Each structure stands twice: as structure tokens, then as C-alpha cells.
Image (cartoon, rainbow, N blue to C red; front, side, top):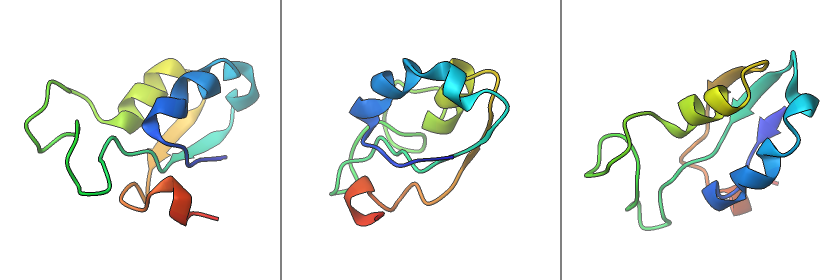
Length: 77
């Protein structure tokens, strides 16, 4: 399963946690803005974990990996 949503859309996905049980999840979610500013590891931020790590914590029965997270959701079709 590939998650390619703006960061703000994750809460909706987390409402369907059971749908991800036992599945491999590829996170394409970034907390960067189109001008490459925002809350992410490596920039001045209060984040201590990546978005993929956050997803893995919220979907504990899924296997989460991160890829393509610099390609914004509107470009993945």
C-alpha cells in the first residue's frame, strides 16, 4: 500500500488502521512545503522522528518504509 497524501491527510488514514494490518506500507509523505521549508528532520524543527516513523507508530501492525518523499502528492498519479 502506498500512502501519498499531504501530511495533513494522515489523520484520516489512521482512522482505517485495520486496513493496513499485515501489509507493507510505502510512505511518500513529507512534511515539507513546495519551497522545501517545513517540519522535517535536518531542518530547524521540533520533530524528533521522521513522518514514516510516525506512521509506523500509528500503524503498528503494518511494515512501513519511506520512499519518494520529496515527490509531492499532487505529482504522484
